[in-house]
Image 1 (cartoon, rainbow over the protein chains, first blue to last red):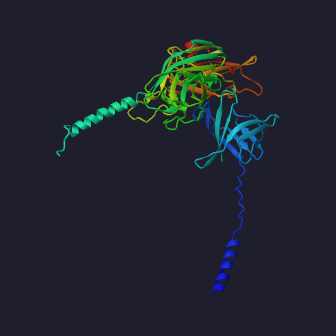
Image 2 (image 1 turned 90 degrees about the horizontal axis):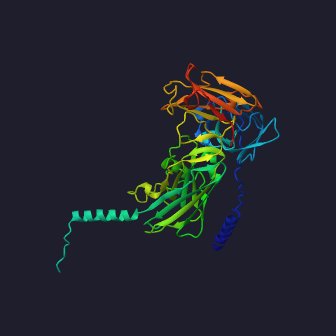
Length: 143
Length: 337
């Protein structure tokens, strides 16, 4: 009888030791930010003053593809002509970098990609005129 | 042994407590941050460094350690948050003590979520400046200090602002506070919140003799374009204050803009009574329109505006109001200076 108990104990100990496995945890992969589509302005400020209701922003559109952009009904903006764009970091972008087709110079604009009311927005800050005048546009995808 | 009964009834105790409590509160709230006087020049040259001194005193009966906070109301055009140095001396310090800019989103203590700057604007105001192109900038001492108990400490704040080159007339304002209580401490509820800060509004505005259009924040004017520094690719606000001066449109029910833009050697006139030029009423005789000059004057690529002249009309276009209510147009130069 003691022999059976001893054998069982050894088996249980073996089971206990060999049941442990090293778990290889892989951090979740942050998805690439996708902004492809047509975006319109839903909110605009100049030096912190709300301009949304006092100026007609409704016709402005910027259409992003995977690497290019096009502007319709131009308003004061970071760029004035079509061209290419990239993120400074596709997974964790802090800046949108525009390169107009008629220029080799890239223009960098601080970029936020918040979800407000369940809807993804793009918030960009730039100075199209005097450097002291800072504009912030909140863009939302237009169907 | 016979128990001795004090000859004080319940009602008397109630009164004793009320009086004692009031005395305790009076002792505790004897806290004062005061700006006694301001040494500020009446005029300064555009682009110069303007020296300002705040002569202050601080006293608190409640021991505490906190940082000194100074707020300054300035025109945005000065970009003063990047061009201002603030230091102070006090009885308890040796030599000038450095102060650093409080970042814009730093919450003000007891400020209901507002930043220091927004709290100053909401609580102290804008010193009757008429053009909404002003801002509060706030500085905080790099170290915390023990506040003097029962004695009054003299504090001298030295402010150096490098102003822009623009012509400006502006009402300055200052506030002195400390980082523990902010502007609305609730530590001692009966205490008025004004006990926790001191303000100063110099009786005369500061005049910066610079270049370009005078940005007059002080005197009511028929029309001052905002932002004062802008070019044709900015969105500018053109206001019309129908009540500021005697003029032919003071009772008009509709006001329109008639403008001429000047490019290099050319001019473009837009003078029509349509939705494109119509100003929107913001109440009490105030009208305004926001304009993107490049779009308004339909400029071609490569074309830029140097200046603009404008006046206001009624719906017929026959009644016109220009500079000082007369026939001469208002003038605006597109410049970032």
